[in-house]
Length: 387
Image 1: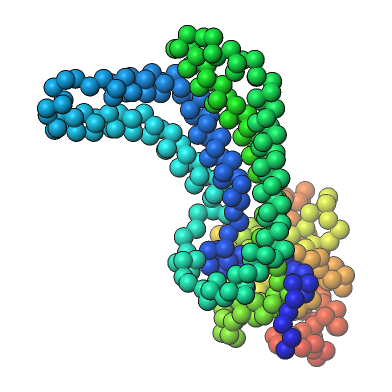
Image 2: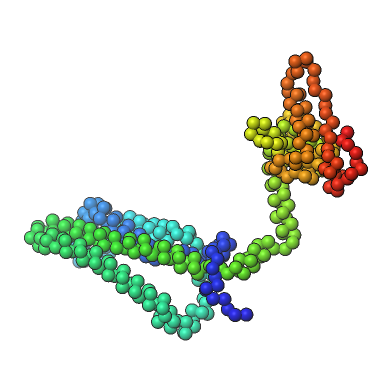
């Protein structure tokens, strides 16, 4: 069989394909986004936190360059002092390190989520193939990466050079300032310039993220045959499909039972069949089936109707006719309009008082000959009229 080309993979990856790629350590990542996030975070933290970090560093360096005379004769004192200075320096910069780590992890997981896969660390023979290694170095993809790197450098250099050009006078005036002010001005100029230069990194990230998303989806695209094979694999063996269908039936039956309380009447066999009907006279042109069932389901419908004071009307032929000719959510067939109208009129009369104080006689609805069924769903012309 000929190997499938990338041109054959025209279908978007399924959720299962994406999940499998994630298990293999293949997730959407943008190195430029991570670099931009970390760089911007570190420089911004140093620029905004300089009022706290600067004096601490000055004090640390001042103390480091001031060596008491007795330290020349006590090696332990010098070592302890060096340890304290190193610890002070670490405490000063640790907030920046923490922010950098958070930015790196947050930006890396923002696109594809946090993933740890042992498969990604496993050695692959394809990576040891010298021919493929040369193709990665001198191939089209390598040329594209080189072009991207040159464009990134040009963009960063352009923005950085523009900042130096427009701040040239400020930079040159540092030499005429007192030493304390010159140091502060130099640090501020450098950090602000670095922060401005990171705008280029942000622009690069905004371009790289959609590109990486496109490449990631393109790499995982599937052929129509792969999708069909995956569906077969998901469905599994016949017993698995049977369990799925059973669960679907159970959910559908539960939805029907939830609609029974809204019914006007439940027509029963009385035991083997039950059909719940609702009729909104001002909104609908005919009665509608909200639930139906036979045997165990019919029993559950009757129980739910009893719990919610829904009238139960026994009419075996009508119940079977409704069951075999009507679907849940659909209107009843035209041939049963008259029979159902008699039932609904009777149910309505139970909730009202006639002028003479008499109740309506319970009807015996007639079912057309062509809509008479036996309990197996076969049409029967010899069962006779409803009784």
